[in-house]
Image (tube, rainbow, N blue to C red):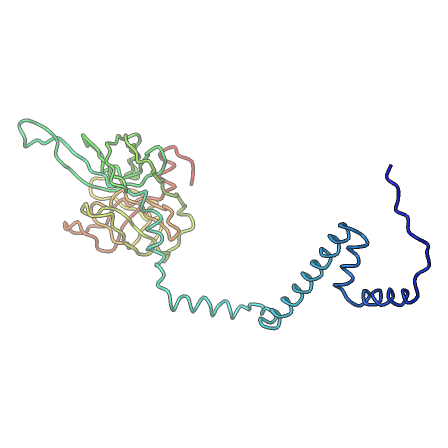
Length: 308
């Protein structure tokens, strides 16, 4: 067993008391000497404890100094007022070229618009075959490739072919019709990997003067975008020899042959109607300022689809 160290009780030599008191006094006033004396008297534990304490104190002092300096340089944060916000918005509007509402709406619907091309029997060819008979537009309404278009675009066609926004072409078949509103539902046999159906809105909130956009393939050119406003609601229209259609949206967004079946959308890019007809008081068959669209609600109701 290790014995404790014994210390002599021999009285100190003359002058030793004076020599010992001087270092003790210095230790009380000098941090470095205090650290050395503590290390010698308390061992490794004391040596580790005091530097950590000193480091924490130093960090606290540095943090306080840095905070005080930043506060002096930056100052107290100013509270934003409504005038500040208005000025920032006005500055952005004056310095940045922002897309129009119509452009943003058209971008929303663009991936869902398709070209619909039909073919009939070539009666002029003795050997038979098919020939192009018409072109129209359509809008994808489900991820399964269900497309809404006009009945007169696909009626009687021997072959229906749709072209998606990414260029993929596919044959399609008719799966439903609504003659009273000149509407048809077709389904594509092949689908793009990233098919994006349109967002269906509601026509119930439309008012005369509201902005709308028509997207389609007039004369096969497109997709083409035209913008206008709602001219009237709950209109009736029927060309010679055809069923009178009711509850239509009247708008002045330009439409021509080939726009039939394309979507009429609001500024949020939601489908509120399907372009169905243009007013043609002459045989020119060109747009004169009035287009009619079946509401999306009537389309959904006639096809057994849930209300939008």
